[in-house]
Image (tube, rainbow, N blue to C red; front, side):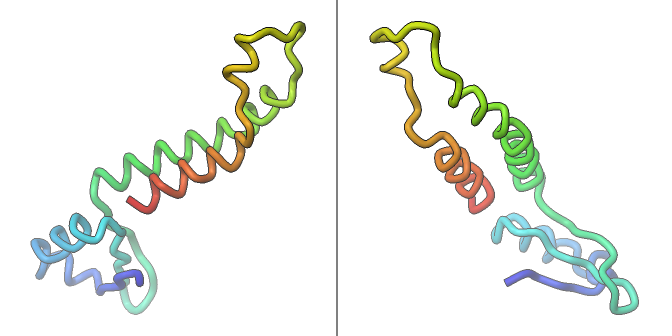
Length: 99
Protein backbone atom coordinates (compact mmCIF):
# COMPACT_ATOMS: atom_id res chain seq x y z
CA UNK A 1 0.00 0.00 0.00
CA UNK A 2 1.46 3.41 -0.89
CA UNK A 3 2.70 5.64 1.91
CA UNK A 4 1.12 9.11 1.83
CA UNK A 5 2.52 11.67 4.25
CA UNK A 6 2.23 15.43 4.72
CA UNK A 7 5.20 17.37 3.37
CA UNK A 8 5.96 18.63 6.90
CA UNK A 9 7.00 15.05 7.75
CA UNK A 10 9.93 15.47 5.37
CA UNK A 11 11.25 18.27 7.61
CA UNK A 12 10.17 16.85 10.96
CA UNK A 13 10.76 13.11 10.38
CA UNK A 14 13.38 12.93 7.64
CA UNK A 15 15.20 9.94 9.16
CA UNK A 16 11.96 7.96 9.38
CA UNK A 17 11.00 8.70 5.77
CA UNK A 18 14.52 7.80 4.62
CA UNK A 19 14.33 4.50 6.47
CA UNK A 20 10.87 3.84 5.04
CA UNK A 21 11.83 4.35 1.38
CA UNK A 22 14.89 2.13 1.76
CA UNK A 23 13.23 -0.69 3.69
CA UNK A 24 10.02 -0.82 1.67
CA UNK A 25 11.67 -0.15 -1.72
CA UNK A 26 8.59 1.94 -2.55
CA UNK A 27 8.13 5.66 -2.98
CA UNK A 28 6.55 7.90 -0.36
CA UNK A 29 3.99 10.39 -1.67
CA UNK A 30 4.06 13.79 0.03
CA UNK A 31 1.07 16.10 0.17
CA UNK A 32 0.84 19.87 0.57
CA UNK A 33 -2.48 21.28 1.82
CA UNK A 34 -4.10 17.89 1.18
CA UNK A 35 -2.99 17.64 -2.46
CA UNK A 36 -0.21 15.54 -3.97
CA UNK A 37 2.99 17.57 -4.23
CA UNK A 38 6.00 15.28 -4.67
CA UNK A 39 7.33 11.76 -4.45
CA UNK A 40 10.40 10.64 -2.50
CA UNK A 41 12.19 7.40 -3.36
CA UNK A 42 15.54 5.74 -2.85
CA UNK A 43 18.26 6.08 -5.46
CA UNK A 44 18.12 2.31 -6.00
CA UNK A 45 14.42 2.43 -6.90
CA UNK A 46 14.99 5.46 -9.13
CA UNK A 47 17.71 3.59 -11.05
CA UNK A 48 15.53 0.49 -11.40
CA UNK A 49 12.68 2.58 -12.78
CA UNK A 50 15.09 4.22 -15.23
CA UNK A 51 16.29 0.83 -16.45
CA UNK A 52 12.69 -0.39 -16.73
CA UNK A 53 11.77 2.69 -18.79
CA UNK A 54 14.68 2.04 -21.17
CA UNK A 55 13.56 -1.57 -21.62
CA UNK A 56 10.01 -0.44 -22.40
CA UNK A 57 11.44 1.98 -24.96
CA UNK A 58 13.45 -0.84 -26.58
CA UNK A 59 10.64 -3.41 -26.50
CA UNK A 60 8.98 -2.52 -29.87
CA UNK A 61 12.35 -2.71 -31.64
CA UNK A 62 13.05 -6.09 -30.05
CA UNK A 63 9.64 -7.38 -31.16
CA UNK A 64 10.24 -6.20 -34.75
CA UNK A 65 13.72 -7.74 -34.83
CA UNK A 66 12.32 -11.06 -33.60
CA UNK A 67 9.66 -11.19 -36.35
CA UNK A 68 12.21 -10.67 -39.13
CA UNK A 69 13.27 -13.97 -40.66
CA UNK A 70 17.00 -14.62 -41.15
CA UNK A 71 18.20 -14.88 -44.76
CA UNK A 72 19.28 -18.50 -44.29
CA UNK A 73 18.62 -20.91 -41.49
CA UNK A 74 21.50 -22.55 -39.77
CA UNK A 75 22.29 -24.04 -36.38
CA UNK A 76 23.53 -20.73 -35.00
CA UNK A 77 20.28 -18.83 -35.59
CA UNK A 78 18.24 -21.74 -34.19
CA UNK A 79 20.31 -21.76 -30.98
CA UNK A 80 19.62 -18.09 -30.26
CA UNK A 81 15.96 -17.93 -31.23
CA UNK A 82 13.79 -16.38 -28.50
CA UNK A 83 10.45 -18.11 -28.06
CA UNK A 84 8.43 -15.31 -26.44
CA UNK A 85 10.43 -12.08 -26.38
CA UNK A 86 7.63 -9.82 -25.14
CA UNK A 87 6.71 -11.97 -22.18
CA UNK A 88 10.41 -12.31 -21.31
CA UNK A 89 10.86 -8.52 -21.30
CA UNK A 90 7.62 -7.96 -19.40
CA UNK A 91 8.77 -10.44 -16.75
CA UNK A 92 12.13 -8.64 -16.54
CA UNK A 93 10.35 -5.30 -16.10
CA UNK A 94 8.06 -6.62 -13.40
CA UNK A 95 11.04 -8.21 -11.61
CA UNK A 96 12.93 -4.90 -11.64
CA UNK A 97 9.99 -2.91 -10.35
CA UNK A 98 9.06 -5.44 -7.66
CA UNK A 99 12.58 -5.57 -6.13
